[in-house]
Image (tube, rainbow, N blue to C red):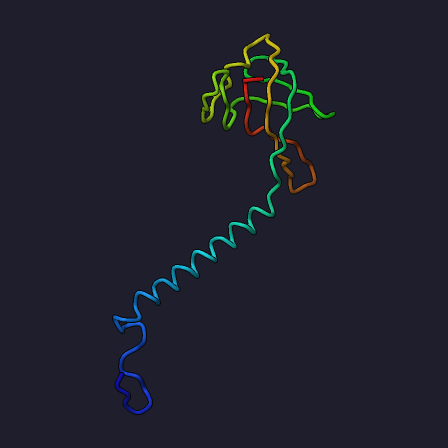
Length: 129
C-alpha cells in the first residue's frame, strides 16, 4: 500500500487477497443479525397450543370445546391434514362435514386486540382424530 500525505491510496477492501475474507465477515455478520432478529421476533409471539376435541359442525363453521374453552372454526383454515395424512394449505377440512361430530386435533394461538379483547384463533386442523 502506498501512502501519500497520511492517506492510504489502496483500501483494505480493494486488495484481492483480503476481499474474500472481508466478504465472509460481512456475510457472517449479516447472518448473525438475521438470526438474532428472527429469534427476537419469535420470542414475542405466542406459541400454538395443541388440543383435541369433538367438533360440532355447521355450514362452513364448527365449534370444538377443549380445556374449558370453545374454539370457533369458520371459513378458511390455514393448514389442515386429511384422514390419510396429506397436508392441505388453506380451505375447509374434509372431516368437518355438515351434521358430523368428528374427533379432531387442532392448534390455536391467542390473538389480542388493541382495546383489550382477545380470542384463540384455530390455525390448523388434523382430521386423523
